[in-house]
Amino acid sequence: MAANSSVADNVKALTFDVFGTVVDWRASIIREGQLLAANKGYDVDWAEFADRWRSGYGPAMNKVRTGELPWMKIDDLHRMILDDLVIEYGLEGMTAKELDDFNRAWHRLSPWPDTVAGLNRLKTKYVITTLSNGNVSLLTNMAKNAGMPWDAILSAELSGHYKPDPEAYLKAADLLSLAPEQVMMVAAHPGDLRGAARAGLRTAYVIRPLERGPGRPVNRNPDGEFDYTADSFLDLAKQLGA
Image (cartoon, rainbow, N blue to C red; front, top):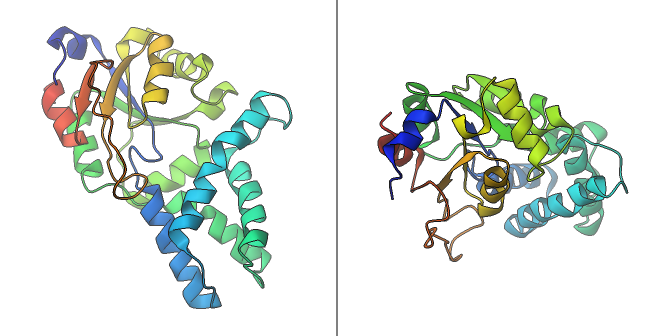
């Protein structure tokens, strides 16, 4: 589904959600857990563990929003969730170094097969940057690890607000010295895109049907809610004329 070409021509920068949109967090965390189990002898359903680790993220951010917790980097929220899961799943005998390294699995997430090639295509026409709730150091390490060609690393951390708070999107536009409508948010999550649209950004929905594992229902933007809908970054690049 292509939008009016004037939208693509007016947009100067693309900001990307990262977890699930750019990288396959679930398969990456499962693999990291399997490696840990091979070394430590744990018997764990790592798919369930990965889903539980990820599902703790939203409630943890809401505790920050409501003032129950102070502002925290996502690294620290991930560690807080992990510490509870270590007890729940009986991951006994992990050293402090092993715990720190496992928490940094989120710095080592693998990209989807189309990610790097698609970003390189999109980069020929637009400034491309992250706009994730992940902290700057996490996103920087992830990009370095996976060879992602970002022009800049932007994070909700820079606004002191997590997405989908409007401040996160508006801060990114401001840092890029662009009006909100000159920035397009690219994400696999409708809620993120709705937050961006409320803040005045353009939107591109990239469908990642395996983000939460096989067999999940897929929302294909049937109501035309977003400016673009694509099946990959390469598909999006083609639609945008990059």
